[in-house]
Length: 220
Image (cartoon, rainbow, N blue to C red; front, side, top):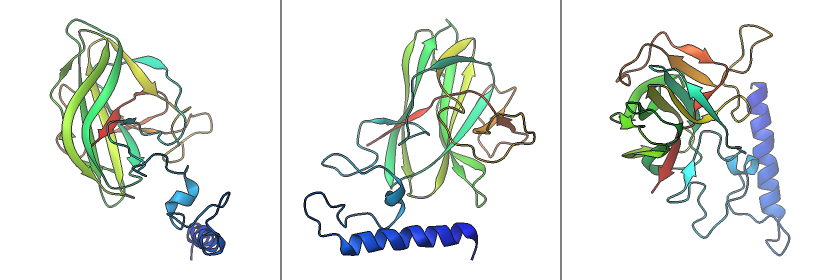
């Protein structure tokens, strides 16, 4: 048994012990939904008792903190940022916040599946280019089912001189190690020279060690 498997077994055992020994009364933790991944996550809030509440926006950093910040991005670069689904849900739209616009600027949004190695695979949805002639939220309706525990990749492709709300190493966990001691954390991948979103698993991708446009998903 690997160290990770041992730690996971200990966490589950502790959670089950808490669940079995809790009285469920005032001030106690209670026995609901605590013997799995939820022991490592904030408690669910709201009548629906869902992590992805209908109509709300969720980014790859959710449920951890995000402080709004923006950055400019290179035209023709497609970005891929992973997240792991916290529960089964239906994504009804993708959204991005355009902070600095351009008359002929556009952005395309997408969500990609992962393969057996959790690497970027084929798209589940890609949008047509969305005009960024004005600032504000840019929305792409979709209908994508996600499954608890599986990894997905949020993607964006800006064309033009544009600024968006961004993720960076200050809001996302590293997805792997770095090739040098003086590199920032790797938070995703990118490809260059694109005019449209790839319709297959990307090749020749590079590590993202800085900013990426913050793509949000809205559940139904």
